[in-house]
Amino acid sequence: MLFALVAMPTVGQEFSFTYHTDYPKLLVRTQEKADRLYYPKQLRRFVQNDTSLTDFEVLALLIGFTADKNYLAYPDLAVERSLYKLNDQGKYREAASKGRLFNKTHPLHQMTLIELSFAYHQLHKPDSSAYFGRQFHRIMVAMAQSGSGLHPDSALFSLTPIDGHNFIKKYLGAEIGSMSAGTDSHGNYLDVLEYVSEEDGARLPLYFNIQHAAKQLKKQLRESNDKADATGQYPDRTKKL
Figure (spheres, rainbow, N blue to C red):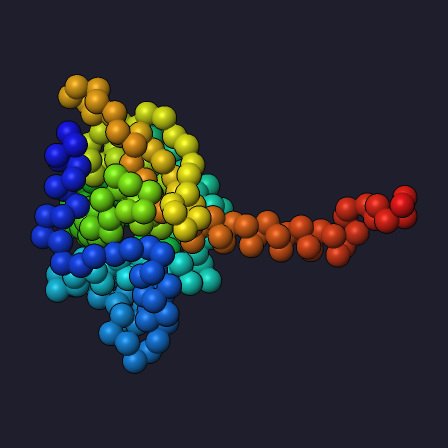
């Protein structure tokens, strides 16, 4: 199992990625119009399922989306879970309709992509199912090449907090054991998910970097608290001093 996990991310690997140094550099590049990694330009290629798009460019796309106004990593989880629930209830048309609407503003959310692929499969629309399935797979492969996942400083890049779960269950075909949080040597926030082999029950922790999502959540909470304080929602304790 360990050999498989070590070998899996490096098959055909064309680049190296270290979150602490490369994430900020790539984020800047995705926002510059003259750069080949410019997010809007690369996104058009991804949406068209351009086969010449490299795994490195897909990873850069994921990073670029973290600067998009529609990127709300934690609030968006509720929408994606609702898509899963609709499919689970057999409401495939509703799942497809709601998923397509969400996908317009969140084209790189892997859980939405796989739920859309499943919904269209159940609706006997193989072309649409394959279209979203390919995009889901491209993101998984790029994610697999972003690190080994075996050490905190080589954590796999995870766009949202649910991506690590999908990676283990849908890409590696394993179960998830214990779940916890941690940091790398630079203080970047990590999800730590235990890989559990279905064959022999062997267990191994895998690390997923979600610092960008955690940073955004902290900012949202701070702004929410500031707004509540400004409207007088919280009592003025200074009067009791």
